[in-house]
Amino acid sequence: MNYKETLFFVAKCLTITLEEKNRIEIEKLLKNTEIDWDSVVKVSTQHYVFPALYCNLKRANLLQYLPEELVDYMIHITDLNRERNKQIIEQAKEINTLLLANNITPIFLKGTGNLLEGLYCDIAERMVGDIDFIVSKKDYIRTIKVIKDNGYVKVNKEHYQFPNSKHYHRLVIENKIAAIEIHKELLIKKYADEFNYDLIKDNLLKTNNVTVLDYNYQISLSIIAKQINDDGIYFKDIALRNAYDVFLLSKKTVAKDAFKNFNLLRNPLNSFLASTYIIFNNVSSLEYYNSVETEKYLHTFNKNLSNIIKTKGNHKKIDNYLFIKKRLSIILKSFTNKAFRKWIFNRIRDKNWQKEKLKQLKLIKSKPNS
Image (cartoon, rainbow, N blue to C red; front, top):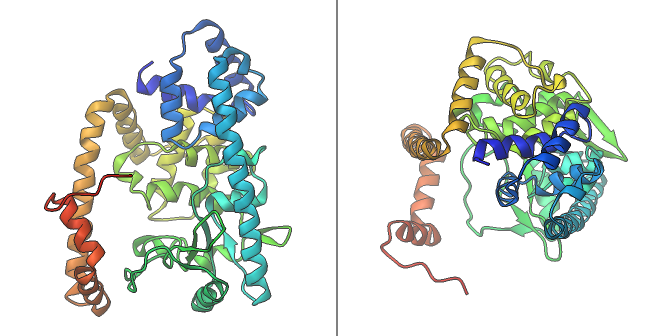
């Protein structure tokens, strides 16, 4: 199995609990085809959907076709993730109780929000990093103070922060598993006028006194996290973890209508939805709006999957281009914006940053891991 075949196989497996057509096709493949399980493990792990893959195969009663050793490994990893997510849910609920007691309503985002609302059949399916939530701008500074007063400290000890950052420094507390990110914005400045707190605050869901986005905005944010925040619109690739969230949410609302009122965001989001439609084998709930821009996107998307070696090279070029573009933008802004000048000055004086750059330039050696 090449990369594209493996990716499509894993993606299709993620739908078999809810899509009977795909379940039949996957069972047929498992019975009659030699599956490269090493590739399946590699791709599903890279895309952070390994536990979700196991959970879907288990619910569809297809584990009998997998190597016993692999099933044991899948159970082990999924159990570890389930335990981690239990702790994340508990931690998020504690934060929610704390902030509500201070008349602040946090809106939980992305993976943590999905866990709290009960999006998944099994909480072990979703691999979650940080606990993200957004508060109103008027409550932003007070939220940081309340959280810090209750024992949370910055992961990085730097005293400065990038201007126009969407969220505060990552914060952690002893004996809790996840870092938290307190957001004042959902998107970079270019798109912030289209998708922000003022837009979402009147369309929320409440579950057991916990607040999350409504389904349409959850779909939008799931795609935005990849397409905008992680520059997916430039790379024209897929992130199965985000795509799986969109697939599950598409069963609760009309996916393609979730962002029909956007302007700048409409095409990037619709293009990602189109790629999920293809990758999940033309699932009807993932139907998208046809457009010239989307067809061009899909053409490049399919071409990228067909030649993964060339695509990796192109991605490196895009990475370099975006790095230079962003750095030049910061420098140009510093000529007219005091906050950016101050950030550059603090960055240059940062001893840890200096050491990191010297390591990257190979002017000093990195210490070997113990």
